[in-house]
Image 1 (cartoon, rainbow, N blue to C red):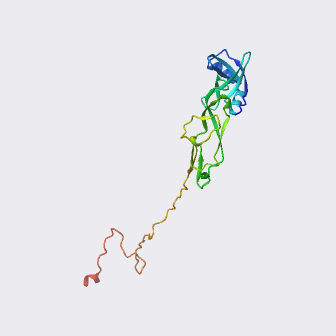
Image 2 (cartoon, helix red, strand yellow):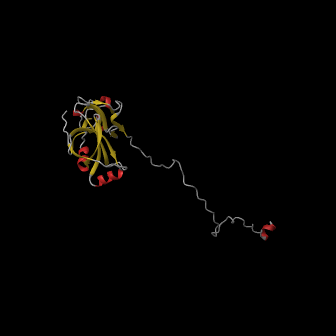
Image 3 (cartoon, rainbow, N blue to C red):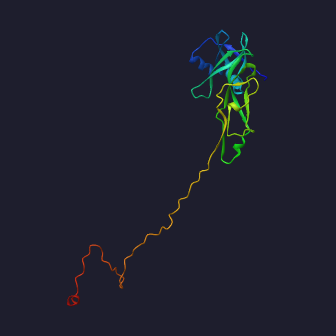
Length: 232
């Protein structure tokens, strides 16, 4: 696998400390440390824009040209991010040989979709977005392509994925590269009135022939009997 190694310019850095590093970043520079192969670590300064652009393109190995010094082939070992997690504030680099075997994490690029993902209500998810692999420095890819077009199962694991020659997966083989989940459509039943329900009966007072209510109001005293009633 061909490796196109980008080149970065570096200068020696004598001063240290968080305040000095902050001033460097404000001026468009990026603090870095180079170590490895039994040599004393070197404090360096890189161009921030150039370095971050290189890293965003997936580069794991760079050729470091140190001002007034040597040219080193380096592996990007670690990135330190700001407290918001969205900007690189420090880079650790390690000297390597192209035939040296290293362990790195490489991002995955998914293409296609499994047959089961085409069913109604199916949702395709990716549990793993990068793969930890072991390989020679010269074989490190910028990204690994995962074609899901011919996958039949709902779950596609690392163990089932065939890596390019020279690459060995270190990530847990049971980890799912892709997963298809069927989301059942929720049916909301409309509220229906109970069958056989009747309207409540409304009682109205009967009225006599003159239109007055026959029933006396609650608490009213009964009328005294008339003379005719006494005679009877």
